[in-house]
Image (tube, rainbow, N blue to C red; front, side, top):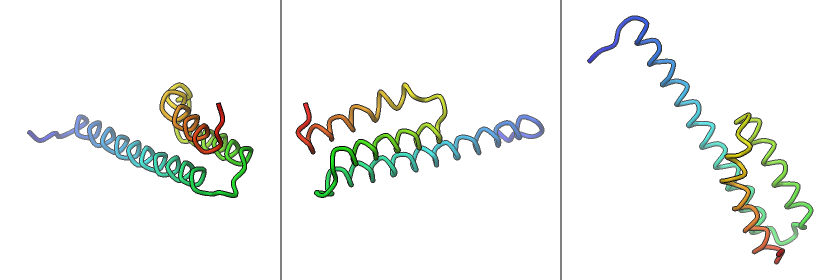
Length: 91
């Protein structure tokens, strides 16, 4: 089935938007993984430095995905909390 006319344009726009969103998601995942690796592996990193990195990564994530605070809090916050507990023995 081939789409012609206005419907084809709508499908093309949706496909472009989906591709752009997937690109942003991959970029976000890469950024968060890098932050987590630095926190886990850099022995000279202080608790305050790690907390600042997490705060900065949250700001960046919300700049990429405005209005998605709940998604961040459900997906990334628990991961960072677990990492901070493991890395710095924080209760």
